[in-house]
Length: 220
Image 1 (cartoon, rainbow, N blue to C red):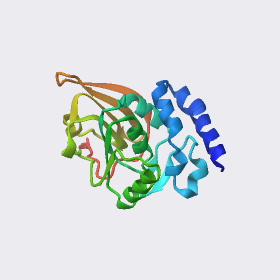
Image 2: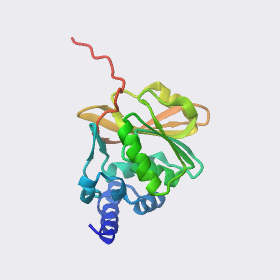
Image 3: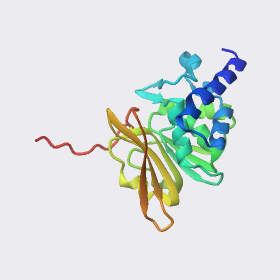
Image 4: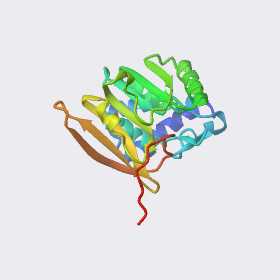
């Protein structure tokens, strides 16, 4: 597919997949329109870069669908001076979107090969306001807390309290919580006086984070 065709596919993705899914904030749509998603997709699937599917990254991991990415990005309300934590770098694409909107992004990836590939993709795009770290963020990543925004790109059967505690006053946390087939995207907001509120966004299904904590299941 030519560069011109990728550009057309990106525009079609925005107009036919993302905007109809209630992603209406123009700044979010502009950033999605500027970041070349095909540059972050494994070569074998590059022609599917703008399809409404989860793209296989190997190691049991996927790129989320464009519509889900758009909804999560809009819900996070990333500001230009925000300190952002991303758990699950994956391909680096969502990292690039966050970095294009925020001040600095700390992104944590547990799989070394994915971390190296994401670093290469982000370097090729000239994105510098990021710190990529290899490690297990399933229980949180308080090293640079507090954060204005936290985005978790793998699902969590339960949301550890450590993530809430890492939010700055006024901060937003976006996560997909639950177990198949009942997962839901949620927005957790911390008020200026330290109180938390939680909002249901939509249903979806993505693979869980590696080492994600699980609830105790009792057999009757």
